[in-house]
Image 1: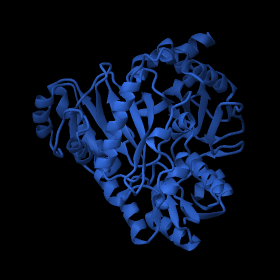
Image 2 (image 1 turned 135 degrees about the vertical axis):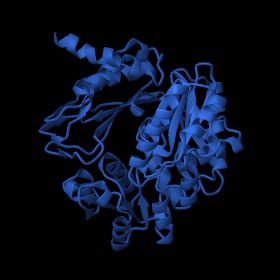
Image 3 (image 1 turned 60 degrees about the vertical axis):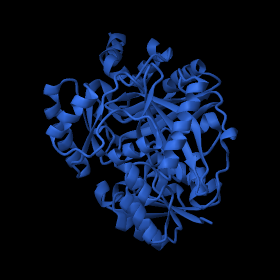
Image 4 (image 1 turned 120 degrees about the vertical axis):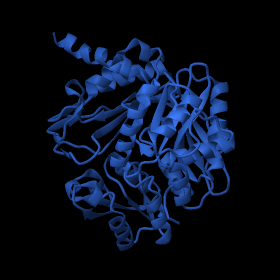
Length: 457
C-alpha cells in the first residue's frame, strides 16, 4: 500500500494531487524551490522540503535532489504531475532503481512514446491511423525534401522529442522547407538538446481531439471519452471542453477503440492521453501520446464522475481499474479556461508580480484549480498559468453561459491576466456554434484583440 507520496511539482497540480491523497488517507510531501517557499502546496502538504534555487534546472528538474528528498522523507511513491520530469524516462528509471513507485508508466514506455518518431511507428504497427510522413528520424534538410515530395505539401517539421509547440515549423512549398527545417532543428536543440526531427503531411484546419485512457497492470484498458482542445494559440491550449460539439456516438466509438488499441500496443499502464487530428470529413489521425496527467483533466472528471488522480495512484499501487468501459457514461458538458498571467493586448507579455487582491467565483457547477492567493508573488521563473476555471452544465450552451458569467466574476489585481481575452473567445458566434478548429485563434486574433479597444472607445 502506498502510504506517503512526494509530489515532484508545484502550483495547482501539486495542490490537486495533495487533495486527492488526503481523501485517500495518504500522507504527502511537497518539494519547493527557494522562490516557492511561501507557495500554497508547501503549506498544504504534510511535509515540505526545499530542493534548490529558483531556476527549475536547479530545483524541479534536479533528479538527484528529488530522489534524496523522497528517501529522506520516507515516501513510497512520486507523483510527477505534468511538465518538469513527468515524461522524463531517465527520472522514471531512477525511481525504479531506487525502489520508489513512479505514479505513471514505466521508463521503457515513456522512452518509446516520448520519441514521436518511434511512437508513430508503434501506432502504424497497431493499425492506428497516422498522418503520412517520415518513418525514420531526419537530421538533414535534404532528407526532409525527399520525404515531402512523397507525402505532399504542406508539411510540418517536428522535433522528435518536442512538446509545447517548440521545434515545429510548417512549409507550404518546397522553397520554404529548408529554412523551416533548419529553424525547427535549431529550436529543438535549444529546448531539448536533441536535433532529431521528423516530418508529416500538414493537415489543414483539423480539430485537436484527445482521448483520455486508463490502463492497469492486468491488461485492462478503457477510454473516458474525448476532449476538444482546438482553441489554442501557438500550439498552447487556452480552452478545452468535453464532449466535442461535433462528435457522433459512432465516431466516438471508432476513435475510442483506436485510442485503446494505441495504449495496448505500447504496453501502457496508468493514465495517458492519445491525441488525434480530426478532419471535417470524419477522418482522424494519431498525433502523439502524452504519458502523464493532462492540464485539462478536470473536464473529463466532471463528465464521467471519475477522479483521475485517485485512479493513477490506485493503478500505481498495483490495483485493478475501478471501472469497466461499460461503466463510463458521458453526462452533461464541461469547459475549462486557463487563466494566465499575461497581457494579450501587449503581445501576450508575461506579467509576473504580486497579487494584491483577488476573488474567484464559486457556486453550483463551478470548479477552480489554483494555487494563488491574495499576497501571492507570481514568479517569472515558471509557467504563467495562474488558475483553471472549469464549469459544468447539462448541455454546451448552458456551459458557455455559465463560463461567461464565471469569468465576469474573476478579480485578480496587481498583475495582468487573459480573462478578458477568454471572454471574447466565448462570445464569438463561431465558437458558440462549435464551428472552430486549431486555426481559430490564428484566423481571428486581430478581431478578438480589437473588440476590447472598440468597447473602450
